[in-house]
Image (cartoon, rainbow, N blue to C red):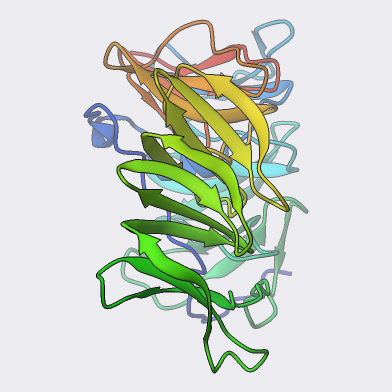
Length: 326
């Protein structure tokens, strides 16, 4: 039985589009952020724009699974159900082509909270305060529990300080995060980050990595890339980029001529980062290879791309699926 509830949507994270070439996202019939969230891999059944509507097709045969067409249709990506738009209203469809809800909803909201990323809130009116919540993975309406689980990260006890000489050094706090004790003298022009006991710093115009005892990587690098992944870093030496994992000690994971954005955030299989070449974009993989072509825009997690107003979804085989063109 469907249950109506009133709730406050809490965002535990905020997503933005990667700053790339200007794309008129509002010109597409679908919502770009929703497609990003619902397109992190390919299924054997995928929606595709054909003529003037979206149809679900079998990707092995490239044939429609039914003659039902939609204004908008989103991928399943391993879920039992997904969102479709019919006559300017939204409904839910299962992977066999059956409508699980009638298209009676004016707006929807995907949840971006831990353990709830399959939830979608549906509302009958544009200006609403109550929603019905549907679990796309299970294919049924649910009453969600309260709370938003937060992962635990130990607070860093090694912190930088600025000395009287206007250089930077490092203090180490005690177990109560007080009483800082100097472990590295103020010798550095900049301290970019501290990852556990490793300090990425600039000295005399060059970048290197040290800990409290010695130099770990020499001060030979000219540029640095920091990432949201706490363990990954990029360092440039001459015309080459070296990418390191800093979990315990610097381990070289990849060498490339490409300067990558979003390292460690790419979720397609073996994806590493996004790089720019000739004013277009591509995905660099952990084995040093790239996608077969460059694109006008690639999503921040590398799951979809746009080129010449064609929208593609990537799978683990690196082969782009043409989702939309007009």
